[in-house]
Length: 81
Image (cartoon, rainbow, N blue to C red; front, side):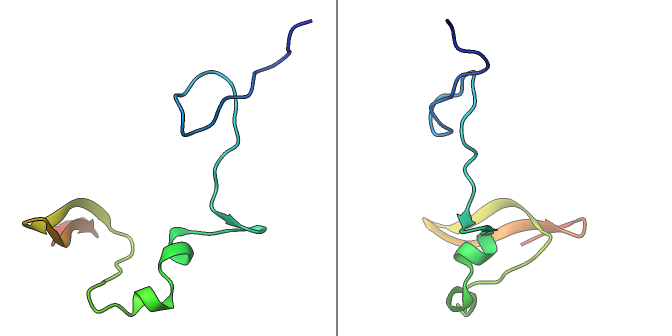
């Protein structure tokens, strides 16, 4: 007798095909961990070379040679650097 329903897929890191697989989430026990919680801890937020801006869309990273020096963003309808 054949299998009923969709078959399990290999995973999200492989080529997509028919089937299903677990959805990868950043969970810490029962709670979801956002990027904010996972990467922007109190120590990181104190860095003098970091500015955190909410409700902004990044368009490009700005470079001087091979060094990233800023980001071009759109916030409140205006593009700025």
